[in-house]
Amino acid sequence: MKLWTGLLAGAALAIIGTGVMAQNARPPAPANAAPERQRPAGPPPNTLGDGPWDVQGWDAKLHVEVVTKGLDHPWGMAFLPDGGILVTERPGRLRLIRNGVLDPQPIEGLPTIYATGISGLTDIVLDPNFASNHLIYISYSKPAPDTPPGTNPAQTDATLAVMRAKWDGAHKLTEVKDILVADAWYGKPPLPEKCCGQGPASGSFGGRLALDGEGHLFVTSGDRNFGEKVQDPSNHFGKILRINLDGTPAKDNPFAGRAGYKADIWSTGHRNQLGLFYDAPTGRLWETEFGPRGGDEINLITKGGNYGWIDVTQGNHYNNEPSHKGIRGVAGYIDPVWAFPPSGNPGNVAIYRGKLFPQWQGDLLVVNMSRPPALIRMKLSPEGHVVASESLLTNLNQRLRDVRVGPDGAIYILTDETAGAVLKITPGS
Image (tube, rainbow, N blue to C red; front, side, top):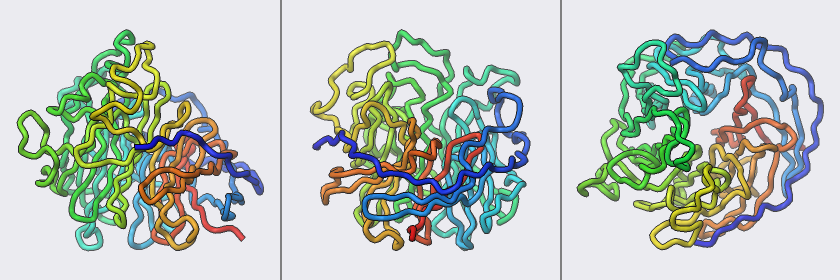
């Protein structure tokens, strides 16, 4: 697979107004959250401004407005049939936005959340029959059930889990049940001399979710900073999983029935996959993931594919150890569609299929968190190669975590900040 690594010049950004936002009262930390590192005293920083902003791209003028503010490191969102939005906050809260107003009361009923470092409450999707059954699916970092009170969060055994619950439409979840608890438990102190084989246990959970429209849920399970376990098919470290909506493995998964393999594995060889999108018109599954120092990737995921980690990477290992088998073009491993030079810290990914930007139809959208963060728009060839790109929103100077195309055709973005926000992008005039 051909690898594209060059970013074209980013589009200019013209900001109209930079008003200062009034501080929003923040709800207390949820009782179900595991201990989290202390934040500095005082109100969270406000660096976004009030907007709106006009952005000139290659072939479209964009109008960027703030839907709402006051979110604490928002991570994932789901659009409701009535026009509302459910948003996860990484510290362990589920929030509701209606008519552009953030409900001050978080939704209750979440399980205990391991929230430290970059772990916590992550992604959310609605059941395909949500209008009638009111079911939602949420991924989160799960602490070991026998963890003694007061245990150092950085050394607590934890793993990725996916829960299913019924939402009452207001402030309560019921029938909460884990449908997946990944076999990726890890809580040991880091050993820097072991390269990326054993890093801090507070990160690399993955946690992105994507429905395939056929009753299956794709789940990214990160390597938990324990890369030496990734190439072992008997665990969930560094895998993408495909399960039924009750949590059982899909019957036609590539390794179903094979001895020594987890039946729910769809692909392997991943590090920390923080973006996932299933594009129904093409049947393609797109993914983004972090490398070590550099080597962040955009991948086109194939059934049973091995994407190389920890043996193949274009990044630099933390102890400067060379890649075990090479950086790309290694037989038996799939190269990324795109590798960020040198690092991009990519968040979520989407394919534009809305009606507001017809010239963007089928384009790949990726948000990233490197400085300066950007919304990256990529033109694709029919084979899925990146042929051109532009970087937008760079002057907002906000870490961008999630990107979704709403039912209205607008593009929605979450800013991953202590004073986080939902942004909405529509055509400018």
